[in-house]
Amino acid sequence: MLSFLLVALAAAAVTAVASAALLRLSRRFRLAPEVRERDVHRTPTPRLGGIAMFVGIIVGCLFATTQDDFSTLFALSTQVWAILGACTLIAAVGVLDDLFDLDWMIKLAGQLAASGLLAWQGIQIVSLPFGDTQIVASATMNFALTVFLMTLVMNAVNFIDGLDGLVAGFAIISNSAFFLYTQLLTDRSGETPAVTLAGLIAAIVVGVCVGFLPFNWHRAKMFMGDTGALLVGLLMATSTVSVTGQLNPAVLDQKLVLASYIPIILPVAVLALPLADFSLAVLRRLRAGQSPFAADRKHLHHRLLDMGHSQVQAVSIFYLWTAVISLACLLVFTMRSFALPFAVLFAGTALCLVVTLVPASRLRAGLARRGLLPLRAGKTPADERTSE
Image (cartoon, rainbow, N blue to C red):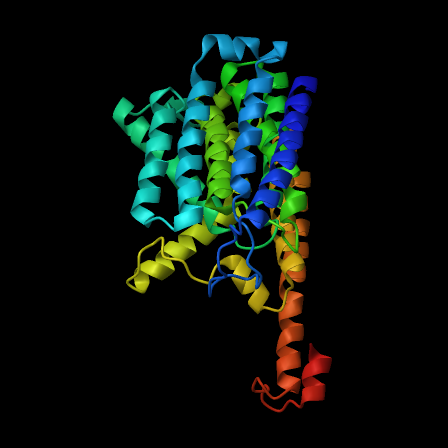
């Protein structure tokens, strides 16, 4: 546990120093792009923070090579170096996009290439659990499924990067939960390279995002851009595949049927919001005859702003949903009964719905008082205010 903490701290410190240096350079050379129509911010803001995060990832991995707990991982596998290679490719594509707005097909090609590199080096789904057995598909099918899922997660995380601190905070919460899960796996099933690698990646992501968040919190001095969001998505997908596709969950706890599916449930759960946002965005754009990667201002975080939430409130709601889902899934794995996990999920969902929907009713009442929204039949503005 101490080695993971030291790696996270090293990644955080380097990311913070690199962010400060990049912010100074961006201001000196005026590298902040013009504000776009779909942007929430109104002041040109540098979006090269992903470079600092990339530096933090590299240093975190290199620092891990000095820790005895990871010696076997580095000695017996080339997967860590493949991860660094994939991150380098994504960082290059992301920086070019942040500076010049690359065509979406070029970005997608870079994402597929990075995912393919990792799958080629053995970080891929080799089986899926089904009860007490595992389904093993063909090598080609496993490769294609891995590349698809990694690319999906990268874009899902990138799609929610629209508010100050949203992706960084989401990644800290979800990867902290996933890291705890890897430690529980190690305690129950013994240390394995796949789980150690997943825990190391999660620790590095947490460290990098902790180091960058002070520069990205509202009002943001710097954005992570596509570079940072795609890197976070790539690493989250990598840690997920490392556990989900290569570990036999049936050996974890024969008395808990649902627990055998936790390697699939937890990664999907912590990514529920970005995956939902991505799916809705793709469907919305395809129905409108647009490219699925065409930018718009109809993401979930934009809708929260339209409901009357401030930026900080909208981001906090995302944090709350992520924390509730992650905690409920971890409790399923640790508790002998499903009562507490489902109680936490039910109570947490109710709380999330309340904090999500209450400002919408207040906004509707305010618009009605100003005559900007039709009143409900038989209602006066005072009645509308009272009823809300």
